[in-house]
Image 1 (tube, rainbow, N blue to C red):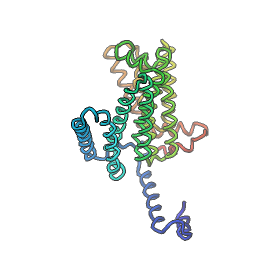
Image 2 (tube, helix red, strand yellow):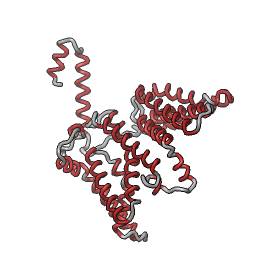
Image 3 (tube, rainbow, N blue to C red):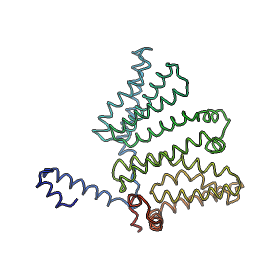
Image 4 (cartoon, rainbow, N blue to C red):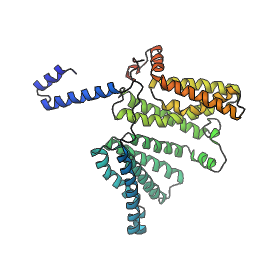
Length: 357
């Protein structure tokens, strides 16, 4: 929209002169913020200052004290409702810290308290209904995920998408009865190298893989709506990709690695190349970060995997050099990859890649 369009809108009575000025100021601010960013910047904000850390510590202590006070004065009769009351208090306080103060870390603390309180209340309530444990788990995770969706809709907090994803993952595990794998792992019956293997633990690994695909698609939906990564859509996509990356990378990598010998290493190496290309295309480093351990395994295999101190020194130097080089020349690598790829649906809605200096 040009300045002439805004002036025409004012003349037509569609917007007031003050509104037109506010729109212009907002557009200039967004343009300036993006121009000021470095080309390789991937915006992420955990907190804005130590004041947020200080307030978050206070909120944790205060919520704990309120919960204990309710339990003490309410007695056993109020015990079941204490988590729900705590969740309601977190919702109430978020109206101030999230909507008015726009504080990031305190908002994350309150969202976590809301999700935990809601989950505990639902599990306690359903546990007295006579339902079997599996159904209790499915309903508890599903209802808690629905509650976190309401939180996201009300407060527009990107971190709420991460909490929602964790609850959805728990629901998927409950539906597929994959919690048995976690119990076996805790008792020493299964290792992490088998837990994500599609052949050794098909229920758990398939559930993880499907969840990873779903989280990735949701993350891309948000990403394509904010390619310049200035608003909450891009921040929400970050948390979705943070869930998708380990779910996808672990399942694919462990399954290929356990296929055995040089063939497994070759397939894993090919998968890591594909993961690197995907990370460059969507301009998200989380996928490559999740694959670092498997890159180290490949380097170790190439070095002979003798397990001595010298081998580990070689692995660390090569791995560190590789990750540092990719991070340093990320923009140039991404520009080269994107220009080499043919046009595909949605390519123009990905972050810009024309700058390569």
